[in-house]
Length: 155
Length: 155
Image (cartoon, rainbow over the protein chains, first blue to last red):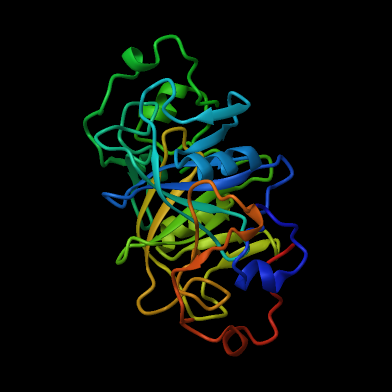
């Protein structure tokens, strides 16, 4: 399924899969809501997760905080049905388009993990740089959904 | 401009910027064509690149292959005008929406780096997994545009 990377021309212009996993065995993944076009999350897959995602058509990641294979939605119920998978020119990143119905993707409770926008341009008083919330209402209550699961966010 | 990460609640729910740069000093960046909604590329920024992108409203990355700050489009002319920057829940990835006009983002010559789609589902003969080209015509001729620049793709 995944071939050995031994020819740049083939990696860039060929029809076969030569995914590049980094030193930790991971490839970064961009996950898009295929209905709204919003980016939902940025995650990682290892070889097994990418294979499972292709074969089962449900997004499976590698959780760096929990250090294990992560079938997204197994705890929360918010699974991601895969509509399309694309790979980039040098085959070291993945773009997933997924259907999450009326669900959510963010452990904080928002639909997208990217709920804050950074102001652009030069700011005189940099201490005052304040982001804008693009989602103002949470889709679910993380306390109810995740109960005693540890928070994956690390400082 | 970038604050010290010392409180998970603040990182997740606050209005201030606490970006997380990895051990190499980098944060991954998803770059979207704001007109079409397509993902153009997946890149990385260091602290300086993120600051420059916010202040100049043109995408500046860290080139891992060339190991230097990379003002996208400086060689090719295909600069990216930043329309919006978002950051995710734990502030360890960036979503850029950019205007590239009628330009392109991929060094191979396509508009998007993600020009190939992976077939979904179980395949009996895995050797035969073949991707589909979603862009069939290149936007520019990389030989003319990049001349003697080395190819950034590494095996």
